[in-house]
Image (tube, rainbow, N blue to C red; front, side, top):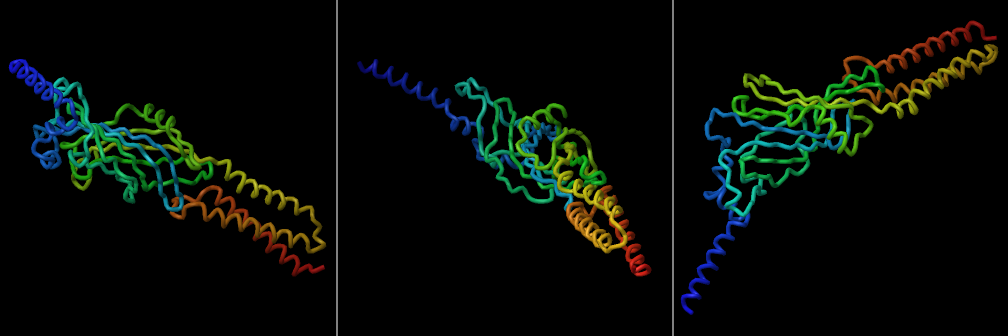
Amino acid sequence: MMLAGFVFLLLLTDGESSNSNCTYRQLFTRLYPKGKGQNTMTRPVTIHTTPTEVMLDVLIYAILDLNEKDQKFVSYVWIDMHWKDEYISWNEEDFCGIDKILIPTKQLWMPDLTIEEMTEKDKASASPYLTVFNDSEVWLRNDMLVISTCKMNVYKFPFDIQSCNLSFKSAMYSDEEMQFFQIGNSSRSTNWTLTMIRSQSEWLLINMDITNTIVDNFGLNQSMLVYTIHMKRRYVLYIVNFMLPILFFLGLDLASFLISDSGGEKLGFKVTVLLAVTVMQLILNEILPSSSDRIPLIGKEAQSHCTAYEQEQHMLNQCVVICPH
């Protein structure tokens, strides 16, 4: 009886010992036996000359605003990053088939990703966890509210097409230490973005171009991944609210030639049309950016109409003074 009890106790102990490796906590203890400090201080490479290759995937979730006045592009993006941590790996068979684990982002080194055109700090909460796979692969997904600069060309307003860049690079590492590569090609990113985008404001996304380049940042060569977002404006609203009234005023101005010159109605009518076009031009000036290099074509047309109305009004005033009857 004593021997049978001893054998049963031994089997029970072995079972508990084997099952202890089936928990995430046991795996975490295996990965971090000496705390988190050594895993966050430096790049996770065993040979210091080996660059860390960061695979990047950027998708536009929403186009929130494109402010022509301030030359500002506001978007909400999803960013996926993949890289290798050469100090982290395990055999999944030793841990009951566990091939990945979610750990806090503060426990592991991460690339210092930055957006060159970004002008305001991200207000969205960063992801608190990242995924580590047993083959040293690390995956991080973040949502970002990006407020960036974008130089716009509004010469063909409101039939303009704008292109804004989001340039991703490291804040401190050179291209010999960190290199960025895109996941897939431009067509894949465009199709995924068109599938998942939820809001586009008054803009329609055309496509996204991805360019991998090396830039000289004050003597430091850095790897950069540039996403160029091409968008076109929804012009129907501007046609209805601005261009159609202008054409209506133009028709009224042409119809004024049918009014007899003998009375004072023609002069008053001309002055009314002039005031209406002037108000429309003031509204247009509020819409168009003051920092544009070229005056928009529609602004030139409105200004020319106002000038023509003013000249015509001046001639009518002279006619009234010279020929009062």
